[in-house]
Length: 243
Length: 120
Image (cartoon, rainbow over all chains, first blue to last red; front, top):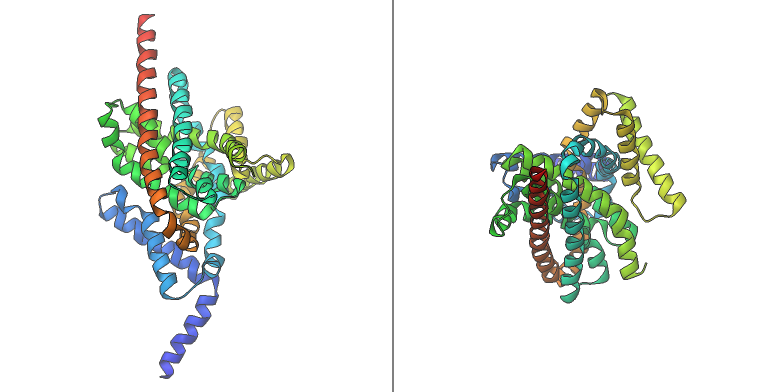
């Protein structure tokens, strides 16, 4: 009995300290990453997806609300800003790829950015999604840190965007090569650009499994997509939805 | 981890955030910071070993950083229960459309550029 009481005391103390949820966040991610590696790096076993599922189940089971969780997890969340700035480095490194093919690459990325945002918003609107959902869906193909920044700027739900971005990434990585083969896109550069544009980092990881060329083009597409979307999408969304 | 490169990333973000507040542009501050760093790299003509190592370390676990926000999806369970169909159909159709459009434009134009270059 006394021992049970002590356990409750420890839980009460730990659950009020940010350390518990910070540790759990990193731990859940490591678990997710371990499963991902064990699966042979299959996109469906995405570490973020697994970590989020484990953490949500844990929080529901322990009756912990999100603000309490976030008090600990915010230290990880904070690093998103500097990490977004750091994306300049891979973009710079992949820039030499552009040289001879700058026109096809830019055209493909502008087309993709336009198709991605308009088709999601259009389909979801037809099926009766709310305004907030539409705003959170629009940057679904943009790498998560930037997509969340865009959603915040236009009054959508950043956390919903984060989840939708990861789902889009997993989806694109799983069906990407198959869809591209269906329309006879077989060039590794084109496959890389399409994967990186539609499925950001998760698509890029998949592209590196095809070849280094596909991976490099995918990383380039992801960076340019993030840049173009960050500077264009908030204006377009404000214009379409008001705000 | 050499601290001055961490400071450099934070400084770029800070200037980016200040810039967006000052101009009122609806652009995420960290992305403006990314552009500032990018321009710096172009002017300097290289990344440098120290910065490269710090950035690679930070980005190797980039996906960990969006776990806390992802967990926030639990706040929207009621809304998701109502709109899951619209969201899933939109995600699937749009992802297919985006892959196809991007892949086809890139293939067609790459072919065109390479035929033109060979013709020269």
